[in-house]
Length: 92
Image 1 (cartoon, rainbow, N blue to C red):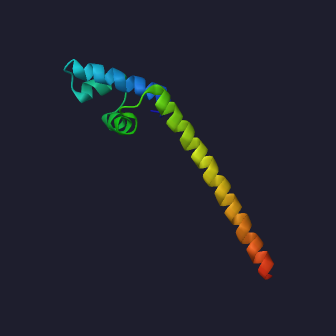
Image 2: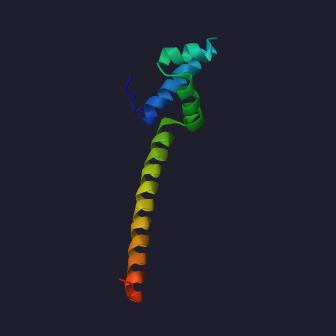
Image 3: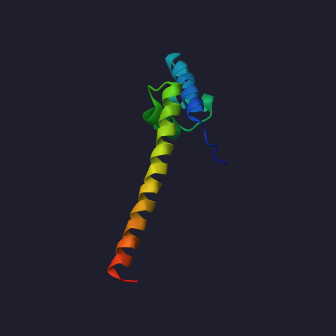
C-alpha cells in the first residue's frame, strides 16, 4: 500500500472527524478505520497536530521549511569559511 503524504489541513480534518466518532462512543480502532489510517498514525498525528487549528499547522510547516533552508545556508557558509581558513594557512 503506497503511503500518501497528507497536508496539515487534511490531517487536522481527519483528527476532528475521529474526535466526533470517538465522542459518539466508538473505539479508537473504529475511528481510525473510518478515517482510513492506522492507530499508530492517529496517535502520531494527535501528538504533532493535536489542538492546532488549520492555519497554525500550515504556519508550523512553513516555519519548518524555512528553518531547514536556513540550516542549509549556515552549513554552506561554515564550509566556505573552513576552506578559506585552510587556504590562508597554506595547507592546500
